[in-house]
Every structure is written in structure tokens, then in C-alpha cells.
Image 1 (cartoon, rainbow, N blue to C red):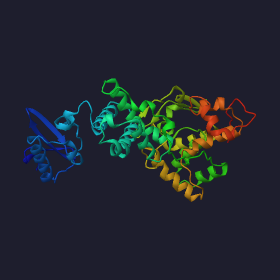
Image 2 (image 1 turned 90 degrees about the vertical axis):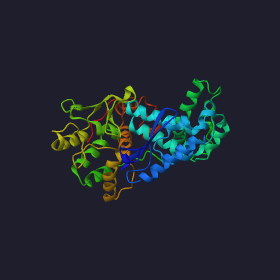
Image 3 (image 1 turned 180 degrees about the horizontal axis):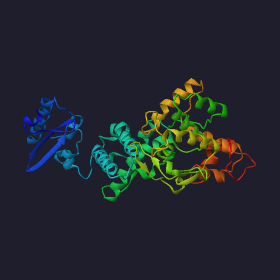
Image 4 (image 1 turned 180 degrees about the vertical axis):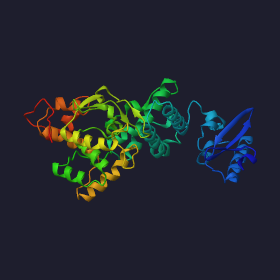
Length: 382
């Protein structure tokens, strides 16, 4: 039906409007779906009416359009104030650039989702209506201290803003970058994270594994507890990474949220992990299930694990059945590291095995588990 109405076409699951203005053709996808042609037609008529009366304002139509960027140049506010743009336009441009980076493989799905969320949830509502000359140090400090979040989270929220203002300075649109003087000392109202390294005991590990409803879930959890590998690294393992003869595991990749494989961010992420006896038991048991597949660990339905939350569902069920206090699956890694330290292994050796850049994180997060007398070799235990 959309094709029967002038200026309307279907673009995937949504209706797209198109028109010509001053000899230039414009096309933009709306938030209306097939069956809502009347609403889309009214939107098109309203846009044309505003253009003819020289009062087109993109903000009026923001909620009705999937992407506003194709029409930004028609907004008189943007045209008049191109040297002092509204922050919302810069956020929109940043989001488009993020999407381009995602499509070209420069960034991962998780990064795209995180920064898109930050902009839509925090930056756009609080700063979107301001012009760049109104975004001062005091405005930024007031903004970040109104959020009541952890220092780490506040730092992440400021990443897109820092990127935008660095670009503005390079383009000569601003002389001074207000973000340069924004440091963690500017965060006067923060909450402390309640996340702690809270390892499981050997008995709890055994009970969790026993209470898994599926053998493949028991295997991946047992393997996680006795290698200390990150969940994304475990998901990415292929059988070609497993060397039973030399009892080693080659870690050279991790899995992103869209099931793609990526190389580690740092050189330390690529490493050879010694295969503890318990990890070997888990792998041998898993080989009976997936030896004919490329990936080592698959879901109970034989599919690739898509994200940690999928494993988290089975994890929660196992902990509940075992009547064990809930801690998230990342505590498997914490448990391995803390146990290795308690068994007398040197932080100077252990940090390499778990993929840290240096031993600083070991000393910082696991100091209470470090023995005074430490060995130099990862123990072959259990």
C-alpha cells in the first residue's frame, strides 16, 4: 500500500518518506510500520509545510524518525549555528559514526551498545539542548555529580563526550576543551561499587557442578573454575586450541556479543594456559559431546553460546538448587586466581596465565590470598 501513496516506500520493517527540496532528493526512514501509511503521509505533509514556511525544526520530528541525520541540513537552527551547534546534533553524528565503525568491524557490538546507551540514557537528556559554548566545566561537573554512579561508570559515560570535544578542538570550533580539566577528582558524589572478589570454596564448586541440569553446562562451569579464563575466551575455544598431549590450552581470541571472534586487546591476552587435571577432566567429558564440532563448548541445544547471560541462566539455576549464595559467573575466574595464590603460586607467574598485562591487578585485588612463601610453578591440582 505504501507504494500507492506518493512519497512513501517500505524500507525493511518501516516506512520511508522521500521528497525533493531545492532540486535535492531526501529519503529518511520513519518509526511507522506498514499499516500506518496515513500517519507517515501526515508526517511527510507536515515536513513539507514547515519547509515551505521556513520553520523546519528537526527536534519536532525526532521521535517519529528512525534517523534524523538525512534531514539535519534542512534545519534552519543547524544552518544558522553551524559554528556553535546544539549538542544533540553532535550526539547524532557520533552515533552514526559508531554505526559505521561497527559495520566496518572497527568496534565490537558490545562497545556500540554501551556508548549508544550512554548517549541516549545520560548525555542526550541532560546536555542535548545545550550549544557547545554552554557546555562548561561547571556544567559537566554538575552533570556527572547528579548521576550518583561509581567512578568507573562515570568515566565510561564521559568517553563519547571527550571524543566529541577533542574533535571540535581539532576542527578549530572551540579554543579550550572543558573536558581536559575533568578528572576523577571532579567526581565528588560517587557511590562505591559493592562488587567484591568473593571466591567459592571447593565444596561449593563441587555442589554447583553436581546441580547442573545439563552435562555440557557442568563441563563449561568446571572448566571455568579450573582455568580462570574469561567467559568470552571460553566461548571462543575451538578443539584446535586444545593440546591434550602437552596439557595446554591456547588462548588467542574471545567471542563478541554477535558471536564473532576477535583478537585480544593486549599482547598479554594471547597466552598458553596450563591444563589443570580438573580442566582436563571437563574437556575429556565435553569431547564426548562436541568432538565432531569446531567449538569446544556449545549450549544444551547444540548452539554457540551467544552471550554470558545465556550461561548465567543455567548458572543461577545450579546455585539455587545447591542452596549457595549467588555470585555472578565471573567469580569463577576470581575463584581460580585466589585458590592458585592460596596454594602458593607466585603472582609474578599467575598474572601471565590469566592474561593480565602485569601483576599489579593480582596484588590489588587478591592481596589477602597471597602466601608469604610462594612457588614459581602453577600447581597440578585436582
